[in-house]
Image (cartoon, rainbow, N blue to C red; front, side, top):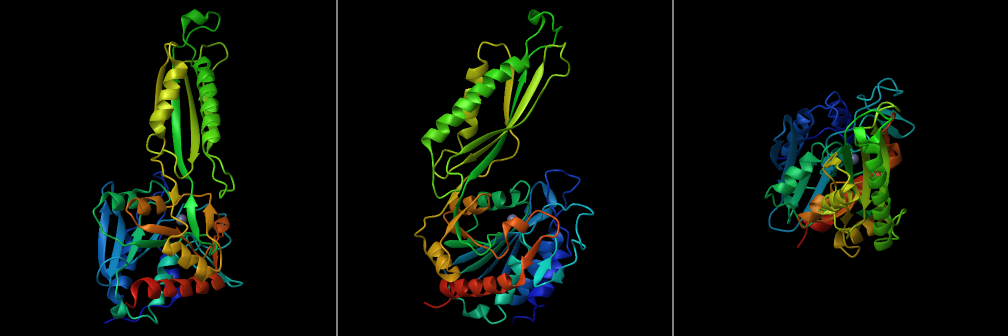
Length: 385
Ligand SMILES: [Zn+2]
């Protein structure tokens, strides 16, 4: 029997009160166990079968998979349970206390994206789980904001999820069918220090980096000549030279130099071989210099996402929102779901402009619109013949 759940706002308030920050910086990183257990309780109270998937690298980080409905096909409603860390002292109210002001709900994760799970749960105030004729799967992941370790674990598992998915990331209710991929890489050159007065006493890593920079800028030009997609605000792939450091004194030959770069790829570009292509460019650039080089990804990359514009789920969201599907400039867990053969669209009530910053909020009216959209999707994909 389905139990009586708290209201939408009560549930959101409870989730906001549970810290679940994830960060590549261990000082700000905490688990999501309490949040996932709270969600598991609510979904099992409704009659869902719940499964916790612990992540190997951290005992207090878990994914939740909640399932209901018979047969194949069906719908996956997917989101992440973690938030980014918050700026101490920069919030007007306590980030862990849901605060309503002028129809807006403030709190850490209110926009990105703790609202999504209460919205799904609240949809069952008027829907009966026992009426489902196809699977409805709720996926709540860990570590989306840091390493995407949660969705990577799902992708590596043999879990069968569904045919279509909605990810409730902040898009201001605009359906999103495509985004770019991103990878961050470090290129380090090592030579030998020596007195600046005689270059023969060492091997200058900055001189070598000059050759690498030339090769990177040339590669960027080639990528941009080869690929473009005008559905994106920035139609071409990008390669940003973001951070460079080398040497310590003008009178010493520089022994070490590192540059960090950000590459944003388009759907359809080779992604898995990008790192190797970079290694080859660097190798060619420093060939014969005697410099040692190392090319290393700073984080595991996230591929571009593209779901067919004609996919039923994209069409449904266009119809339900009245908006044409478009693109966003941030990455999501979508490519991992697409890789599992799940046609995925991203659409959520909050605005990315309010995410990842102090006084993050979600608009109350948009929450209600999203609740209707979720109900309609469940009806379309999981009810009836
Ligand atoms: Zn997010």
